[in-house]
Image 1: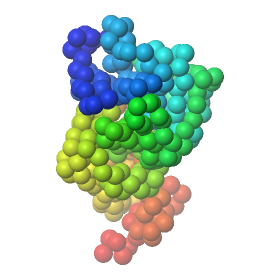
Image 2: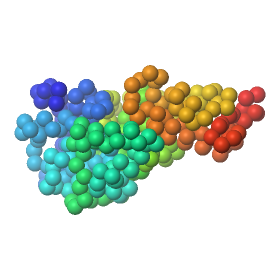
Image 3: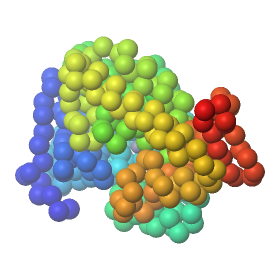
Image 4: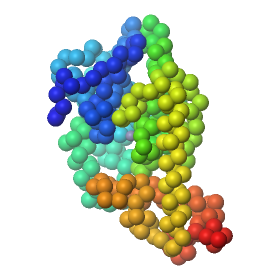
Length: 311
Ligand SMILES: [Zn+2]
C-alpha cells in the first residue's frame, strides 16, 4: 500500500464512521462506512483503505460485511473478515461465488482484456471468492444493529443488477455506492449493467430525503442541496453522451467506429478496458435510439440517424 495508515481520514457521523480511502476515494480507492449499533457492527463496502486500518488495529470487531454491489473496489477488503457473513443483494450475490462468476459480471468482448482484469482482481483487489457464508438481501431489507441503529436497503440497479443504496438510521446517512455523483457520470459498461435501470434508479434516489449523502468515490459526503445539484449534473452526462452519439451517427458508423471515437472515456485516456466499455455502453444508447426510430441499422452493424432527424 503506497498510502500510510496514518494519512487515512475517518469522519464520525453519529454511529457511522466514514473510512475515507486514499486520494479521497478516487478509483481504485474508495470510502467505506463502519456502522456501530448496540449489538452489532457492520462494515459497508470495505475498500483497499480498510486493509491498513485493520492491520493497525484501528477497527472494532465487525459482525457483518454489507456490499452495495459486487465490484472489485467494493469488496477489496472483504477477505479481512472471513468469519462473518458477507451480505450482497440477491442479484449480485452469485458473483462472489467464484472467480469465473465474478468475471461474468464484466464479460468484456475482448479476451485479452478479460484475462488481464481477472488477474488484477486477485493481485490488486484481493478478490476472494466465497460460496459458504454469503447471504443475500432484497429491496426493503432492514439490518437491525441494535439500539435503534438500522441500515435500510433500497435497490438501485443499473450500475450492476443488484446495486443498492443503503440508508443508515438514525444518522440519516444515505450511502449511494457507485451512484457516485462524479463528473465522469454514470457507469453502465458491464454485462450486468443497464442504462435504463440506471436512469430509473437516479430518479428513485432523488426522492429520498436524508441529511447526509455518502458516495464510495471522491465526492465523499455531501448535504442534500449539494446532492441534488450534483445528481442533476451526474444524470445529465447520459444525455450528453447520447447527443454526441446522434451527431456522430450523421454518417453511417459501426460500433467499432463509435468505440474508437469515445463517448464514455476521454480520447487518449489510457484505460485498458475502454474499448469494451465504450461498445457495451453506447450499444445500449443505439438500441434505444433504434427503438425510438431515431437511428436505423443500414446494413448489418452500420448505424445512421434516420433522415428526418438529419433534416
Ligand atoms: Zn461499481
